[in-house]
Length: 101
Image 1 (cartoon, rainbow, N blue to C red):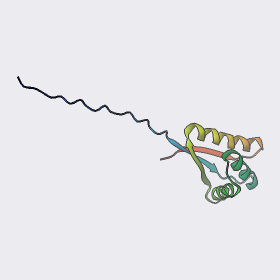
Image 2: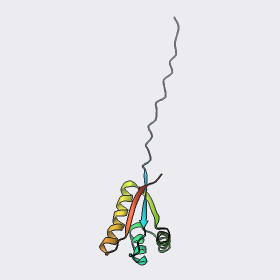
Image 3: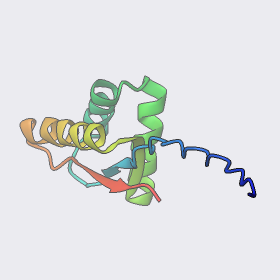
Image 4: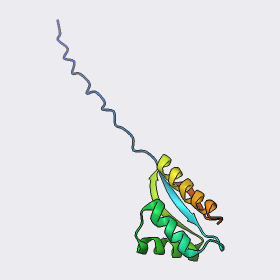
């Protein structure tokens, strides 16, 4: 009789997949005062004065600027908070989200 040796297959380890990331984008408009945009960026996104000023100026020059990158739920919440702050003050300030490639 022949003996057959069977080696057990290694079990595949399950890896948790990293969550997809989303960019929060500030859109430029010609009506919202720059100081108000800086205040919203500091309040909602916890930026310093210098960081908020840089983001605001980039959006002003290029039409849009990525503010931060978060998981989907956090990005949508932050974008909604920023947009709502603008609406509450009567400005068309707009933040959007977009999936990061």
